[in-house]
View (cartoon, one colour):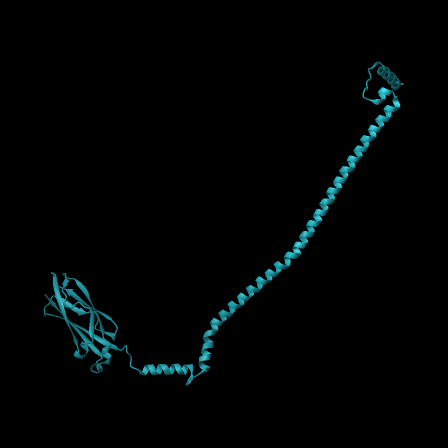
Length: 273
């Protein structure tokens, strides 16, 4: 009843030019309540359809996103499995190769070490069994040493005896050799020492001379450094040491006149100036 009154009043307003719904077609042709109801129903159905379409679209998007994510994870897992299949054989092969190289190096090291220890006994076995000219190696070496021992030695040994004296009986100087004798090699330099002591309370100057005996060996006795014929300044109660550096020439061995001489005498005499 109320709706009828509203519609009657609306129709009257439309006639008067004061229609509340000027943009609605039903107001201009006065189609009545049925036309308005149909319009409202169509708008509601359109909105419902739009909402349903939005829901279906969102649902489809969610399904598509989930499907894409599942496919992506499946593809990633498949690629990872294929990568493991491709990499593992090479890695395992490289590891096996490294183990094989390490084993070879260790084997070579043990072989070299064992060869070092076995070298001496193996060489001894070879020397005792290998035939050479005139017998084994040991016999050959023995023959060489025997021939060398029969030859005269170039580096023969000769004894050098040292003596000393002072110029006067009551000399204030004491003059003695530091060694009585030396076994010297012919051709090799030898060093000897003489000591002189001043027993007085004043400074003294001394000069020494020398001689070598026997005469046959004297020509082969050569001094490299000597204190003879040089002034020696000796302070009161001072002890000084004077060196003699000498050698016996190798020609001494070739001289028939020295064949029976086994020692040489070196004598020094010290005088106070």
